[in-house]
Length: 341
Ligand SMILES: NC(=O)c1ccc[n+]([C@@H]2O[C@H](COP(=O)([O-])OP(=O)(O)OC[C@H]3O[C@@H](n4cnc5c(N)ncnc54)[C@H](O)[C@@H]3O)[C@@H](O)[C@H]2O)c1
Image 1 (cartoon, helix red, strand yellow):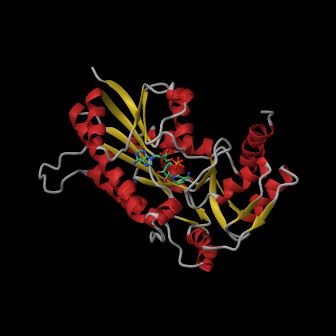
Image 2 (image 1 turned 180 degrees about the vertical axis):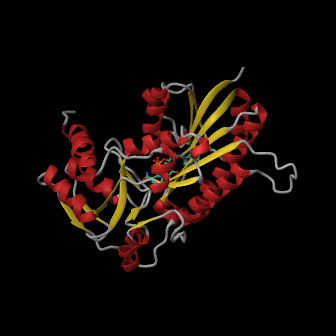
């Protein structure tokens, strides 16, 4: 019998690291990690199998389902927003093409064993596109159906992949008149900017939040690339992982939609800088002239309305802004950068 597993693509990324620990703790499914780059040994030891390669490699995926029975897919692999603007063609190929390959794998897997495959997709607030700063300030917390007009290749990719997921969830192949269910149980979270105390992000447009904090804690100078009043919703990494597992484990009969906003707190760059300076006196933080990346931030909402997630699967963040900074980010960053080498 093939071993039932949870597959994590993009396992070597920021979320992947935290999610693998949480899945190992949950302990009900063996973990298969897939990434372009090898995982650090302690992380690899938590996995039953690690595949180093490109998720666009059909042979790799086919071999995988001949060896193991994939019951859950956490499809994290992607090019992030800033990197996608530099290489939009590659972003489309990886972000859309990769998701399509993984959805196809889920269909083959579900049909092979006649057991549904839960497919969790991390979407993003980049699917929103607010036309200007005034509208953003007026709109406040926005719902899933508002302003779905992304301004970046990454946002377009995420929004389209949500649609693909919804399509595969319903059925696959409109002209198959039997309308046989595909067996893919697609569930997506629209994440705000994520802040981890354990890793420094790269390639994202909300990176100014975590970059500023890590720079302050490590004593490096940092010039923030957005204006002081630029505001985004953020979430601490432990909450992001809890939300992924919360949605993956949610009772399917309670879910009335496939795509959910998840919120935690909304802060401006000025507020993050103030908290960083109070925690790390002597931090050398300044402001760069806002450029193209700042304009992208201006098109993303200041906050999200996540009532659907709260009502349908009990989403509730553990880290509001004070707890996130005072009990998670600041103490963990202090230990990370102040402990003797
Ligand atoms: N971090 C955030 O703030 C945030 C916010 C919203 C959504 N998300 C989404 O969550 C997911 C994970 O984000 P992250 O912050 O961990 O990103 P990350 O950049 O840290 O990790 C992505 C991983 O995917 C791997 N990868 C890229 N292309 C691949 C390919 N073709 N085949 C196999 N592996 C490949 C990379 O090697 C990397 O390890 C992404 O889909 C991202 O869009 C992240």
